Image (cartoon, rainbow, N blue to C red; front, side):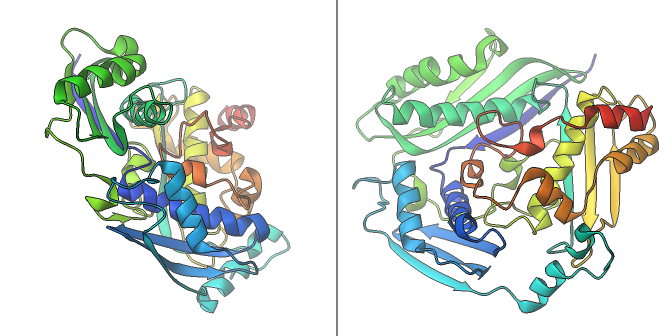
Amino acid sequence: MKRTLLTSESVTEGHPDKIADRVSDSVLDSILTDDPNAHVACETFLTTGLVLVGGEITTETYVDVPSVVRRVLRSIGYNKPGLGFNCEDCSVLSAIKEQSPDIAAAVDHSSDLRADPYDIIGAGDQGIMFGYARSDTDVLMPLPIMLAHRLTQRLSEVRKNGTVSFLRPDGKSQVTIEYEGDRPVRAHTVLIAAQHDPDVDNEQIEAEILKHVVYPVLGNWVDEDTLFLVNSSGRFVIGGPASDAGVTGRKIIVDTYGGFGSHGGGAFSGKDPTKVDRSGSYMARYVAKHLVAAGLASKVEVQVAYAIGCSAPLAVNVNSQGTGTLPDERLQEAVLKTFDFRPGAIIDRFQLKRPMYEPLSAYGHFGRTDIDTPWEALDLLEQLKQAAA
């Protein structure tokens, strides 16, 4: 069968863009703790010595933004001099204003007013969202992105518990998997970029990263021909915001499927669930995972489109990429019989008006088993099978 190489990357929570995502989601969580009906669109920008938090927020509560920022930085590991960025002495600026009343009116009073309460909650914006699933892994995610995430999680874990004492918060991974047809067969290339203390040589870095990070995660996917690249640029002492600016929403492929399937372009972090960039994408993943788990396809992409102020989606499409047991039109019909794509229904199904988003800001929003991700549940399998029968 044809052999192909497919690659995905991940970054640690100490990467500048991921710090920005975590700050934005932490502000969101802090607001939802006291005001679950708040409208939040929070953006964060970081550079050397500066964190700027801005956006549009309408809420009845108050959040001490600088305290949230410093707590996040401290928990990630930017908590001591010498890293080029320190939670204690960086400047924190807040530039937040209320959400446009025009947008608020569109969300709270749908243009389609009927008896059903879900019909009076409109989408917070227009856009297209995608969900994806495939049978590579037990969580029905592509193998390259799952391994890449596990590598960066492991990097942070061994740094925090002291197993690898020279590590600093910033880091990246990239995994190339060789596929035979649609079946993953081996790890072709594994790349790790790990920020480190200045007094450690490359030989020690590579040896300890392979021993404590790569081999425990990759397991049997590694063979004698697998290529390992550890800090291939050489020295990686200066990292984090001291090296590169960070911005909320700049790692959208890392957040989703690692380049498998399509992406509508909207980021997740810092947005309350009326923003369908977030809630619609969670729903699309939920549906795609059900289709694969039900045995109706071995890989599938679900697309949903919304208009601001309208509760019903404009379109829902199913693409089984030639693997469906039924024509895609039949799968689409079964999906529409089984799942409710209205934003209000999605919010209620997944209980999205609660503080739950900070842990999602790094290591992906899908395929997670270590945190609360209700869109990963398979609670409508029987209903979907009956609809498809």
